[in-house]
Image (cartoon, rainbow, N blue to C red; front, side, top):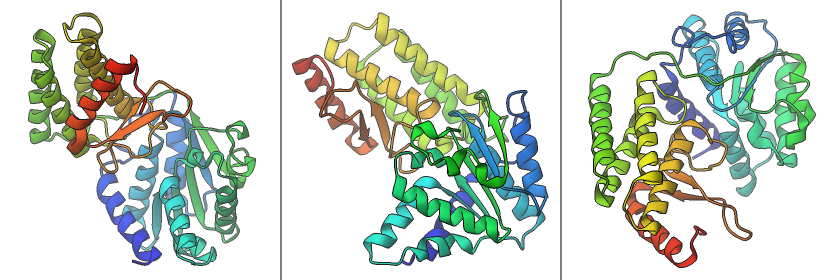
Length: 335
């Protein structure tokens, strides 16, 4: 499969995933109103300058990126828009180099776009050689008068980002979102609502009578729900009830459960891992729940050990048993 085809298939997948992220479904607040207005202006003005949006996790940056794409494609269907992530671009560049291709091929596959939208520039931190290639690409976009927009959680060079990527903003506009927010209410989905209610009821039963087998079943069900409906950026306001349910279970594990210590600590680790993955620490994992269904569990740091464990539903039971045994033998987790 050639690189252009890979890009096109990626675009098709992202279009399906992000179709509901519009300016109308974005909840405008005091902390994000400037970013909202600049993104909307970028989408509506064919002569707009390059735009960079900065903000922490769950600030709404990706929502606005999709909103720009959807707006342009709706109002100007003749304009070719490519929305991608830094992670996907790095993968593309690596694939081209490893297969003996020329570095120019990396830039050519994106130069076909009239508007390029790139999410998570901060993931380039520490990758100096790759940053140079990105800079050349963005510079070429700028010089040809094409539009370019990016998002990043970092706005300065101290995080191993070249200052040409963040500080200058490529001679364009920038806006900072100072607080996280929960997306506005999405259209009603009866099946989703019913499944959510069922899982919340499962959680309530666990709080009243905690058992390992019930916990495992609940955990898999809530995990499958997230894979099917949420991903990492699609949290509906009603889904906060699921997060509250996880927090209730975490409190039971911390203060009330009669489980063995090794089982209790493993359940705590998994519950925290789910909470982190869906709401907080999307910078910690490489195989996130929105991409391939793997869950990344943050682990206590030990020299010579990984800081996270990436697992899939298929190996959940095996991972759970191994984690219990690890804690039983060492009094901690280290994989």
